[in-house]
Image (cartoon, rainbow, N blue to C red):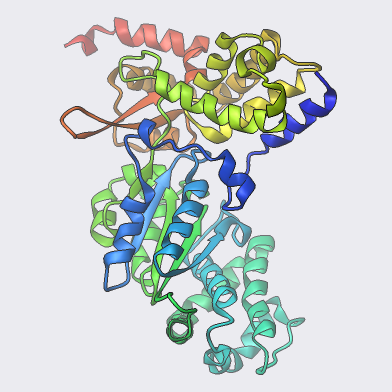
Length: 452
């Protein structure tokens, strides 16, 4: 096969979320049946459509599981139902390794101003900006000129604030402290802007929805050891009153580990039950291969690969891969993570000079990824992984939440015959193949204290 075809296939697996353009829509595979009938429109969208008051919802899932693609689809469906949607990826404005609620609300302000600028009047911000211009200039904004006649010259005020927060760590505390003082008045001005925008939305639009994506990438950090309080608690619980002050519907993505914390019930009281996008099942709870899940991942492979050479009738399991076993192996080893499938394919092609892809390239790729996952596991955690692999459940402790966040443990959902939704967990398939895990599993099984 030609090098040109290999290059085309390689680039088809760039791990970007599928947008709503025509080319991306052709690549989309519906995974609802292998995610416990997970349906984002029913779980998040319906509340927005039917509610007469603003809703504030949380959406979680493993990084790389496909949340952004599903949120894009939700955006389209909401727009078809009369909503005006402002979607933005928060990590473009934030340093996810150091985030506070002020950073998130500033990013929301910039995104909403930009999204609604054609339908509202920026003059709602005149008084706020003018009365605070001295401190804004002091916060590294001296190069931003204030022009009360132009919305496009006011939005950069907030863009510069978020850029400074993200890229200049030495200024963060200073900016946060000042913005924290000014936050109530900032939100009031923003809400006036939003309400004005609602009056002037295009025909057929009557609700405004803000989707704040990629907050799930914020790693958990303990900020009060005595109380067991984390940065996630500080942002989503302690400051929930401010996150819920926007005069519009809002969806915030959250780290999957947060919904397993001691604050889970409180989060449900504040936002409603957080919705979770589970992994695609590649094995069932009894560790048997899940054929429909594997076939779904193979369908994702086929749509990306065969788009370039459909006329020649290439076979995924003969012309692209050396045999069906290799295709199944690479799908199963993802644990059901779509982005990981993209990464696997690109690395496999790094070790492929001509098609079909050989066993050596697959083994090399999986061994490199296996070693990387192994490095994320602390010695004390191997026995915990062994326990999860047997019980299919997790203990509600920080160590297990950290393993969830690092994707060493993956969450699955299935619809049982009695229509009950069953949530369960398993260890990442690559970790199960390590010597450390096998030793821990043997130790766990031989521990007589666990037998009864």
